[in-house]
Image: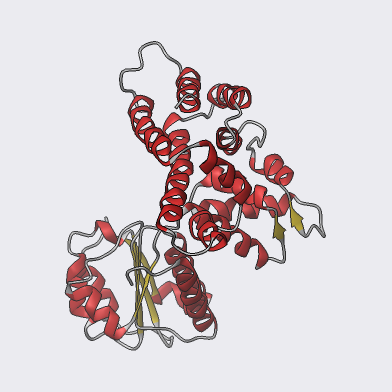
Length: 345
């Protein structure tokens, strides 16, 4: 699964959800990976479709890794269903099971009448060991890898498109700034947003995100990175001050967003110097489908060496933002100071 993209994971999970909705189940599902959205989505689909409501009392066991060991799970999985075609055994938070690998004993010869779901949250099993290898032969494995920041924007566009909605690039970027690459959080905020929108709305704007999600476009890290890209000093300092003074401001998150921004600039420079492909393909490869004009300006405003110096500076402020040697400086002071230093590089 190395190098597997979110598009492949999305397709795999969609196909598996279609199967379970039509009554087709694998004997074992191993759902894992750093990004928990897809594993949890499939796990819930299996729970929702495996049994009729009246069958669940005697044939459904949902437990957590902290509360069970492999022997208990295997004993449950080897039982036969009562007055039903199948039984369901789900182990959530399986990564905390001390004897997780021992489930390989059952997975080598699973019962056809049991559906066993092993769900890890933000973690994966060792692919060299027996559990992974036995499930690979007898069941199905979903490994959900974390998305890159620009891939998250693409994911949001696709996610909204599946709901018959078009989302503006700036609106998608605001969601990324608010939720990062947490797809579950994006899905939750989208559900809340759709409940509050007037009936018949087909296009989501940045104003809709501002109003319903609670993030200001005017004073956001998105606006700060944009001002820095064009070296608009007055705008950048003003935005930094306003961001830093908001009650929910957290310096490490701002530093992380700035790091991603300047890392793109750095990568863009490196690919240009290496001459890898034409200009348009470089932009898509590094930046995704959005904000090319901004980054065209940024690579002119910041040389390769300057971008590297900014990255080094951000490492220093990541340390300061986490409580290291800041003296009497407030979070707003730190962000303004960092912004000023970037502009002067």
